[in-house]
Image 1 (cartoon, rainbow, N blue to C red):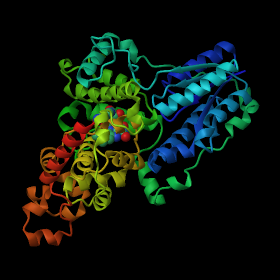
Image 2 (image 1 turned 90 degrees about the horizontal axis):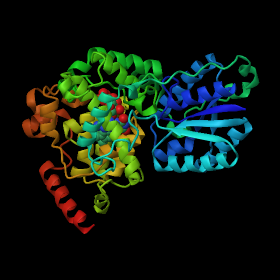
Image 3 (image 1 turned 30 degrees about the horizontal axis):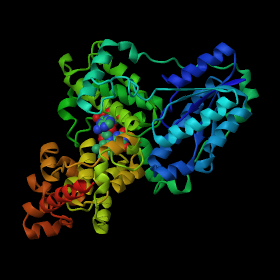
Image 4 (image 1 turned 135 degrees about the vertical axis):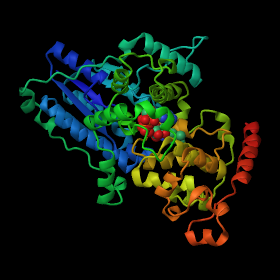
Length: 489
Ligand code: FAD
């Protein structure tokens, strides 16, 4: 008999991996070999629109993990499901063919994934195979901290407060799980075919535009646990302290850029918070009152990540193409084809928006401030269905994470003014000049709204587009539309 750990796209590491540790312990207890597998579904990548950058990052993580696991004589088999509907059958037959007695995996919270796991669990349990699904994506599993009426928090601020108090009083929540124990060497020859299953390659429709692009993305986002930990250490040592003051300025490289590592699980949130704890003199008081403002502000973002997983558990429709506030499903959106093309290409004529969208194409990543502004511009000023933007982000981001992305795109009445946002957060226009080359030589505050602040002839010389829409008019249009359509709901 063997014990199986089943990796998903959100726990791609062997360190501090809760289900893998549990699988390793049972294997040891039963004197059984530990085997691991990853279910690769190219049709899933297509279905979700997963970007080439993220698809490649995942494959690279698998390659590195296989090397690490092989040193411990633990195979990492790749099970390929040609069609989305094949997944249950593929896993069940793999389990049966490899004489597995126990299956371990870390939970995924999206509806399709939960349904898949339920189906598989029922079939395996019927066949007498034990299945254990555990929480690992967050420090506090969804639903464990309750509000005054005994239900899960639905509002961030009280959730954040309760989260901080829980971690402060229970530092053991940050204890790391052990790495898996090595198998005996004989496993190498006995299970050779599992060690030798081909690693996935990028499907035809997920190829990068060129080899140069692939190399650039890999340099920016080196895959794997070690690269993630090095980045974490660099951030905590050099940038955490000033994060509260600098994080909103997209020109300064002041955030951690750890999102691809968190979204694929290449590093765990426990590992990140342990590093932060060290910088906090060993204390798990991550609140403002610890006096460590940078740390408090950064941990707050991590708590957003935790909260958004809870939101998906409480309101599963948010990952089924529906807004959390269902009234927004009644909005009649516009089909502004030209606006859409301009938004995607970074040619809206609004410097901050164009800078963000060009940045996304070049680096497969965007700063949070830009995500908020470009999303607001698409759904409010262009009044284009926000789900198209959500999908476009999935198709381009290296860190695509369905919980964070859908919550980030959640429609609301808030309309960001991209000119004042730029003046406040990119004070010197450095970020705009970096990404919008037509504006590189525009001096002073004209860079924020060149069509208004330069003379007609100066503006025309730039070769930069005029704004596709008028900000104030479209803001009013959006508010009026929401009032009309939400009221109808
Ligand atoms: P840091 O500022 O260093 O923060 C540390 C970590 O906290 C991040 O890596 C991330 O895991 C988490 N985090 C930070 N900000 C947020 C936030 N607002 N919400 C939830 N978690 C957060 N994040 C993704 O990981 N994947 C996405 O697909 C994604 N899509 C987004 C779409 C929109 C429209 C918006 C407004 C936000 C989105 N975010 C997404 C959240 C956020 O923009 C990114 O997590 C952040 O910019 C990543 O940069 P960083 O790692 O340097 O963050």
